[in-house]
Amino acid sequence: MSDYPPCRLAVLVSGSGTNLQVIIDKIEAGELNAEIVCVISNKRDAYGLERAGRHGIPAIVHENCSFPDRRSYDAATVEILRSHKVELVILAGFMRILTDVMVNAFPHAIMNIHPALLPAFPGLHAQQQALDYGVRFTGCTVHFVDCGTDTGPIILQSVVPVEQDDTEESLSDRIRSAEHQTFVQAIKLSVDRKISVAGRTVLISP
Ligand code: GRF
Image (cartoon, rainbow, N blue to C red; front, side):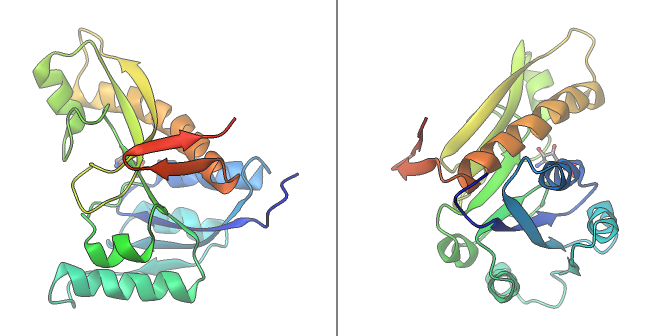
């Protein structure tokens, strides 16, 4: 049992939401002292919204088309998050770069998962970048979000081997299995208040 009340999470998605599903499952299994208070998607047809609905989690479509720029979109996102009293924001395949408006509203309280061992292969198509480079190992990285593209302080990483006959799809599948475990571990460290940040370094207490 934790000494703390369940951490109020928002999970932001743009697509399938397999990472979201694992987080939901771990919470329902009592392995993560957290509650997902809303799932937000910038894509109306994101399957992650359906996953949220199935578990009785408020699913919010928040498209960017009616906003003049990224900062005003982020300001509206912050309002939604504040209205749900969110403590920790989880980007689980949310395909937008955040501006200072979001980052400053939740300092060291926004986590992202990236399908490579940062700082290698940031940005889109990280798995294909790894194949093109010919690395023997790649993996996934959970990091706090800053205003750059996949540049924030690193919380956890897992290494995944690259096989000779890998395609982008087969490598992505292998990395995604690692993501599911690594993301939940990182969220657990945060909700159990075992993480502090010193400059770029994330310190984990035993
Ligand atoms: C993952 O590969 C993650 O690393 C990237 O987006 C993908 C999301 O997958 N940021 P899913 O929607 O959780 O299945």
